[in-house]
Length: 314
Image (tube, rainbow, N blue to C red):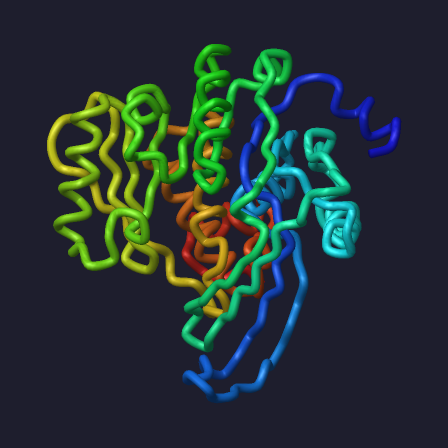
């Protein structure tokens, strides 16, 4: 990071995003090859990846000041490419908290997208992620914090530091930790984590039960079937919000990460929860129109227009 960039970020952040940073290789294919078979790659693209990175890119493109605090990357070819991609595609994100370590292996993920938008993922380097602490000094620079669960224990410690500093936490897929769910402003999780075999009724009941247990807001996302919101201090059943219909489904990679970004954006704007959820759902749907974890993120004006009308941006 240049001296000018450091100076630009020397104040407050809107959001601190903590978690996974990696290099993604996105393959668009006609079909998944059967065991021992073969299938052509129609399109390949290397991109900034990882749950934290995807969320941070969306927030920065909507005009928020974002600090990305993630795992170290290596001084290898993948790490150097990832740094160049950040400089080109996300120059507004503060990356000073992403260390480059010669001995580190840059996490790398292959995401294979089929015509229906479903994706299969293979990765390397995620088991030994080296994640930094969230320092009190950084925690005091923002009101909002979020983390993902890939590096579980470092994420827990970062959440503790965030809580201690009075930050409002949006926790992604930490619903099995009572200490997090009991203090996070929003606990968001998905059918992937709660159980792919669960019916919509079961997901609604789970969201409400988690809310009643922890006393905080719980959101369970269900992909194209929308999400269930069990709001803090609101008794009764979870409320269903329909998903927005993507103008075209190319790749669903990162839809949950962009949904989370929408939740954070709405909190920063002090919107009420229903408005925040609608914006998040609209942003997630638009992201499915292009390859990659943030490839379909649109401008704030386009996203707001889509949220309002449900019509594809021109």
